[in-house]
Image 1 (cartoon, protein in one colour):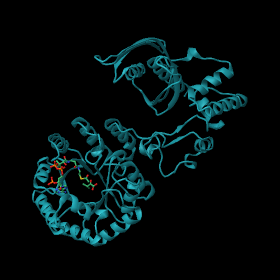
Image 2 (cartoon, protein in one colour):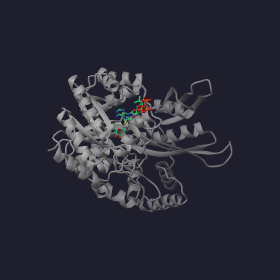
Image 3 (cartoon, helix red, strand yellow):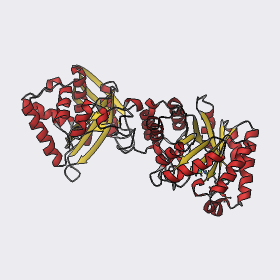
Length: 498
Ligand SMILES: CC(=O)SCCNC(=O)CCNC(=O)[C@H](O)C(C)(C)COP(=O)(O)OP(=O)(O)OC[C@H]1O[C@@H](n2cnc3c(N)ncnc32)[C@H](O)[C@@H]1OP(=O)(O)O
Ligand SMILES: CC(C)C(=O)C(=O)O
């Protein structure tokens, strides 16, 4: 079976996302994670760009990773020397080949550009370093000229050529044709680098692989210039699970990797992001949830499971929910309700949904308790006694929580980026940090500075089981603490019921 190599450029093109600049410690964390994920080559940066960039690439190259480390360079001796001095395994050189870029940027003749490329390859190879050559803006370059320059670098000993769709104008059809034609013309391995200006980066990368490309350039979460690059997770799952090819990626780390880059880049993933997004395996609609509870492949692609990518499946309660999932959710929380009560709960959930209310798991349980005539407050694992939160412009926000946890007094404290963050970290400490707040929303439900705030949270435990709850009040910190404690109490109860 054909193995397609994965070249990750999160730390280079990904970092070119306007506003992103990864400090050294972030670059190292990401590089180690990419190595754990199994990417074949990490493009660690552009060593000639800044001293910090040089230091980061050199540091990553010295980590002894299994992944090869690559540095980008223009066809300028200084750039290439800086990459070689950073001790990379591979130097990636590039130059514009399209008419528009040649005229407005490099301003050289086409013959001069071919000569520069050949000299660059020979120079890098004479230092015993691997070389990748990119014809920048390849998809807007005349094919005959592309063939000429790629053939010239092949003859000069290049290890791999890259075909970049620099401004994202290719379509799967044009990309397929281009790669097929180059594949017939060249012996060296072919790599592709697609941008997402028309939302086609993944599709174009896939088409290139179908046409014979040996390697794909991707970024985690698809971050990168303008609309970004092809997403690593999407490309890998498409060419493996759908196309049946192999990569060296350990797919069970895809979600973990996506979350790390989401956190360190500050670029939040939309919940509907394929493969790694919060909703990628979530179901609220009754018809879907009913099917999925019996056999997941009824309303999921079936070719992939959440476990394959390090995700988990969620059945969500909301306006579109049906009896089966509400009954299952209540059973999981330890409530066996009669059919009559279930009907009333379903009606209420839909009524709340029609009013635009987000229905939480806790709302459903509270309804069940009221309808069953039992209020089981005494079953709460955490009973909050006192919460103190300090914040200001000259102190680090700090929270101290006094609570009873399973009948024992506990005091925890934490600092955070703000008072809510500090308070919620202190709450997490109460249960030994084994919880993760995967969703946090706050709305003002009345106007003015004394507005009532409503906090909605989804909390996930270490087994990937999640629970939604809300808290409300004029104090946003207390409303947040209440919401999380409400959710944690039921997660702990569900665990005891198992
Ligand atoms: C498609 C891509 O993603 S390509 C990679 C893009 N990434 C980056 O640009 C990030 C890092 N870049 C930088 O830090 C800076 O642009 C530097 C250090 C590389 C160069 O900075 P400066 O010398 O100030 O030049 P500036 O960025 O303004 O202009 C680019 C210069 O490189 C030249 N150039 C562009 N591509 C190439 C190339 N492949 N080979 C040789 N020269 C090139 C341009 O013609 C221009 O030359 P000029 O200064 O003689 O007119
Ligand atoms: C350097 C090249 C490969 C690039 O990033 C692009 O063309 O988009």
